[in-house]
Length: 135
Image (cartoon, rainbow, N blue to C red; front, side, top):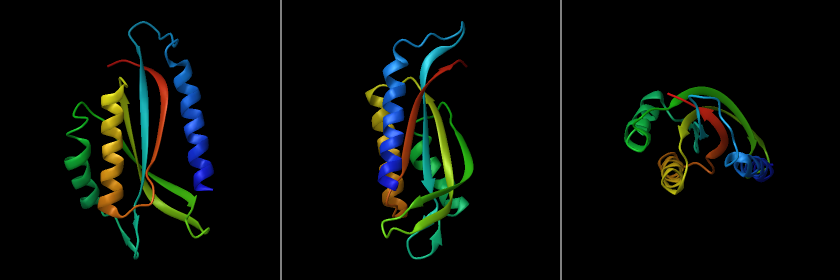
């Protein structure tokens, strides 16, 4: 199921990217990308990523890569684990509005990899969609 969900998210992301170059935004807004990254907080062995550990991760991995800002929300997630069982867990959703391009993609990948390594995660979901944004 997780593979299907990731494939669906990728297909939706690619479909959105296809229309991005022709996106017409209202005056004062510009075509950008909204990246959402979902971080499960359960750690193998029964532990959970604490609020202090999460803040440390943000300070060390996210803020240096995206110092202009981002949004974090507490969410609840569900997916089918490697064993086939349904896994429900508390999660964090990170939203970042970016110009896009290879440099941003590299930063997003580094954040996902760092979280997987640091907290022994099987997956960290990334969803991207075209948006019109202005600051």
